[in-house]
Length: 80
View 1 (cartoon, helix red, strand yellow):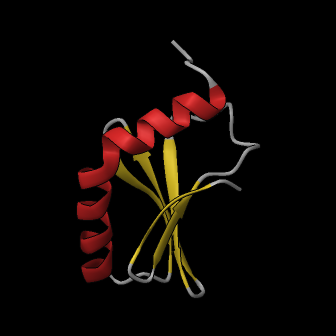
View 2: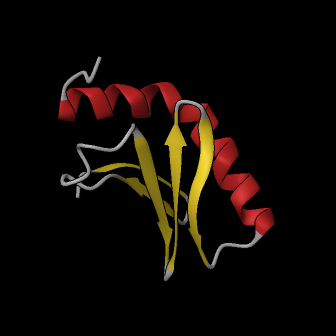
């Protein structure tokens, strides 16, 4: 599970075994977790985060989206 970024209480990562899914990132804080697609940025799953916190997380993902995509393609290789 490569960690790709830590911002405040949030840890952003992806799972090595999810090669067959479109580029996405997981985010965790304590026992809270969410998954976001990266192209376009869109919530895929949410476990316990409030709507307000999801908005904050989505803003962080949009700010770091290019870096996340670069890390995704660098790790898994281009799927194009």
